[in-house]
Length: 473
Image 1: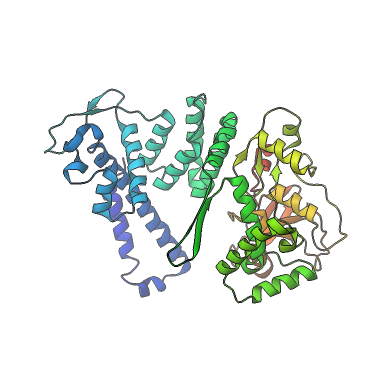
Image 2 (image 1 turned 60 degrees about the horizontal axis):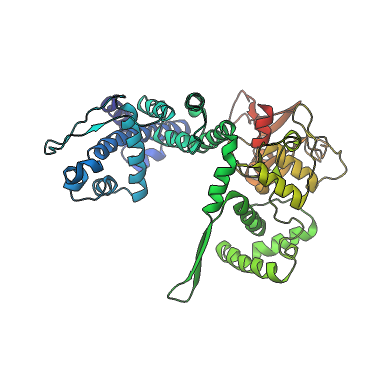
């Protein structure tokens, strides 16, 4: 277990060097400012781990089998979560999260055989505990205790690998868990969660349909009329239906949120009208939602969305289509979909074939037009999976097609191999701040400006598309 007192003392000493007020922070140079942020985030992660240990012990002393002699009951609370809320000003969700992870750490640290647990001096009830955590969760708890994981990264792995079928090998789960622990320091929490889900689906492909159905079963739309006469509602949708709704709303609001700029005259005129509209974004979406309902009943929905209709695309390899089983992905979403969903989409909407060579590159279609065609954009979406710049998580629908060799300056070609998806922010960064994207065969590299990196070390760019990552593995 980490020497928390020593860590906190060293952190406190370092914080003193930063100054005592906002003015002192404002005088720090860029490197010191970033170093200070990293230091304090590490301090918070260590604090969270220590809190989880304490909460785990509070929960253990408040177990149901102790009855009214339990710590929470004696202090006048019905649960350890309520007790923790009262002494820490934590939200209910935060308290529940600490209890969950603290219990995991306590269970994992407990010996295999029953042994007495420490109790409050006033607690006369004796009780025993045994470790009931599965081996892969024990590995997470061990890494958390050794500070190889923060509370957030531990939770990401636990959530990502959880909910697997009982027939999945514990040995395979432990191996996957150890691999994720090793990768945790190189990934963000969101990336780690997605990586864990991909590994879970690879280990438990038969369970994809079950998890997919569970998400569908959890869907709802609730609506009510408030006392002031306003109509209000809330909804929860599974990824397949949710992506369709979000795609439609994204298309409506895109010009307001920095959507694609390289569009035809009619599209540009529509965007200018929308940008000048006096309604707020929230009001615009509310009105558009009502209009979508009207159009669904009375008219062709294409009149609202222009030439680019909202669509849910299921991406799947030809090999999967030619054999039984397998799985695919909804474009813009990392969660796997079952073979049944693939077959339903093929039956309902048909297929668009996109041929990739052995290096993962699409066939190009030359330089006939400056703007990428819809079919090319579909291919870029499948290949890149979203904005390719660093850790950006913008999906294909938020991206513009960037010419690696600029159209006018370099006489660049409008083909898939020499195009790459970038969100508006990173597209403008590439053009305005001298960030360059380079292609070497089928790989793409980011070259920073000298102002950011005097050596201009090339940084590899990786596809965000789960189907491409799977095929490359």
